[in-house]
Amino acid sequence: MSKPKGPAKSASKGPGKGKLRLTVPEPSARPGEKTDFSFLKLSKAGEVARPAPDCAYEDTITLKDTLIRVLDEEHQAVGPWNPKASVDELRQGLRLMMLTRTFDSRLVIAQRQKKTSFYMQSLGEEAIGVGQAMSINQDDMCFTSYRQQNILITRGMPLVEMMNQIYSNTADPLKGRQLPIMYSSKKYGFFSISGNLGTQYVQAVGWAMASAIKQDTRISTAWIGDGATAEADFYTALVFAQVYNAPVILNVVNNQWAISTFQAIAGGTSATFAARGVGMGIASLRVDGNDYLAVLAASRWAAERARNNNGPTLIEWVSYRAGPHSTSDDPSKYRPADDWQRFPLGDPIVRLSKHLISLGAWSEQEHQSVQAELEAQVLAAQKEAEQNGTLISGEQRTAADMFDDVYEHMPAHLVAQRQQLGV
Ligand SMILES: Cc1ncc(C[n+]2csc(CCOP(=O)(O)OP(=O)(O)O)c2C)c(N)n1
Figure 1 (tube, protein in one colour):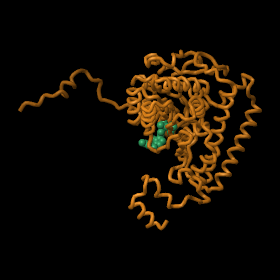
Figure 2: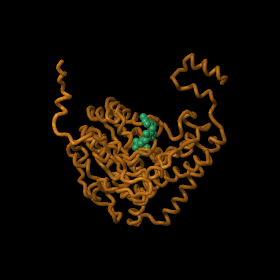
Figure 3: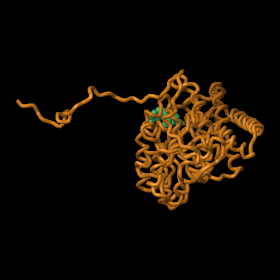
Figure 4: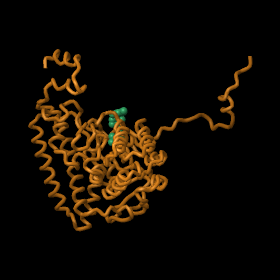
């Protein structure tokens, strides 16, 4: 019997180079070593051109591999992306970043004191959400991950209300049903956070499409981390955003890490995350996420584009996750302890404060007194929230709440289950 002839046989012809090998990307350094940050494609401040916000997506193709930066080594604002923000706007931005960091550090302590079960800080990433929230309208809708608490803070959600959610106490706006930090606030245009990574990205695009269908004027913002871009929803969102020219800002926060996983394993060092956008026909920018002025400029550009029906923009924000992934994580097990100190884009709060100092609009003393003021503000909010209960003090909503809102009207089987519980 003759052997079957198939494509596999002909494909195996030709000179191979021996056995195949699987590539598994690794970070350049592990604990005790020094990260080689040369993988980051950096540009000099002021170096990258600024196309008009109504440009064709093709005009952004080169921007996928450059880095939009405004603040230079001397802390001066330079180049075509300089947003020319007023000193008052910048001072407000700095204050909101400092407030976010202060809020985070207090809640990390609260978690260590067992007042809450869990917390996630945004250390080092404060500029991105604050700057974007300052660049859009209060009624634009934000579909965030769990690391954009600064958007709620910028929009003025009372810190007490945020803490009530974290403590799952009697005043928790989400009635104790959600893991701490999974905020939801219709009032502050903040879509309910879900634990399932990436789902909000496609929903943000749908929301933007709905806004366009209704001939509304509001836009949406979508938020995802570098790791979560590997989720299918990320690509689905891009296709729909491009096809329907949805008025959405597609933010990718590249903080280099997804828990213990370096962004190379989500594909980020072979091609930038901004490249994903232009590959789909979406105008895309790659921006220094630790440069508050660059955040303002790029966010305004994208918001203007969306609002004028010029379509979506994808923005890769290059930053660094300076803290642990969450209170359940110990980064010293997988990355060098001094990584953030060596990260070339520095600390967004330090950079903006140095810029303001150079303008004569801030000082070390003012920094310290504002810091003290913010700590007092957060502490006062914390004391107030703790009156409604914490995990250790134990006050919670009634168990009867547990059955509400599963459906709009409670079906008979849920009524029966509630009665079984005797509540
Ligand atoms: C669908 C899904 N898979 C896995 C997880 C577990 N998980 C929670 S956060 C996280 C890492 C996400 O990293 P990244 O998107 O880079 O965001 P970052 O935490 O760095 O802000 C993972 C894998 C999840 N919540 N949902």
